[in-house]
Length: 386
Image 1 (cartoon, helix red, strand yellow):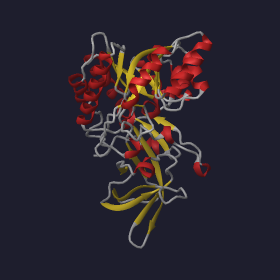
Image 2 (image 1 turned 180 degrees about the vertical axis):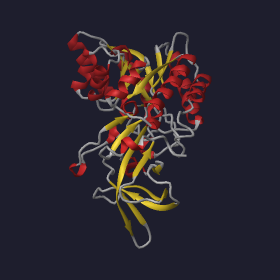
Image 3 (image 1 turned 135 degrees about the vertical axis):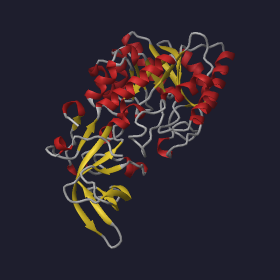
Image 4 (image 1 turned 180 degrees about the horizontal axis):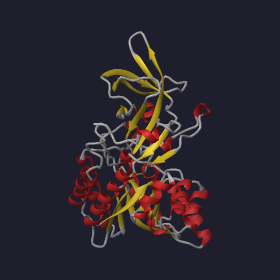
């Protein structure tokens, strides 16, 4: 089953471009809003997944907050109208100007990953006569079943504060005059589809909360980060992730204290399936063993296959002819510029349009100008007819 694409409109557009089906996005947000309300969770959309201004505007209209990992993302969230009370700022290496931006904007919380960062935030908040709300990002040493590049919660990760040093960090944090400890933050990785991973995280958080109880410490919120994955193989059959199962797992396994709120930071699961990268076939090249489809889109428009060996469903949306296998590659001067090997496509010719699916997350936002290629534009379904 192929997705619904307005071919007559596409044929008049210069490729490559990112195509966003806003009906899919809104259906996803409708369910996310429903389940978040049902499970009493605060949602902060992870801006790094897709920072397109129109996408941000739609997400903000649903009443969600934003999770930012750079000053640029903070600026984008402010510009999109996200309220400061819903902004969290994470990241292992926050620059001074980025910290100042968060302080000046009176954001809800800094997710802090080290003692040196705590001390710098304290100094800069003091210089402004402010007190910064912080959550300590704890590395729970929980293994996530995902690619090792996007696993973030194990001991050898650069992220978070180790369990072994937590007592010491708490001692330091509580002595800093311009820091208010308001939460704990966790994130174990991305593209996680097995709920047991999240159950394991909750079990570890429960242990850490017991440690805080013994110290007679209370934090106002627990933030379990993001990580919920999507189905890259069947984007039409499973366009919306299992938000209900995910949130019910967290609620069932996590033991909150009276008065505590639960926060999550979904990104990929919100936007991945609404996006497709649309590209045109430049050439069909016959090799000694393989036949290559050479596209005008490359790793500059979608780096995930080259960086993570990630799978994306690829469709020839111009052809209904019998299927055959191709290696689908881009024009970049790198052997890693390959979207897939032995991909089954309807018979493909020069000029056909190819859709690379599930690129709404980490497609446009990770694009580069390598080889001095111009950035591909965004096209929205509301402006076209299917």
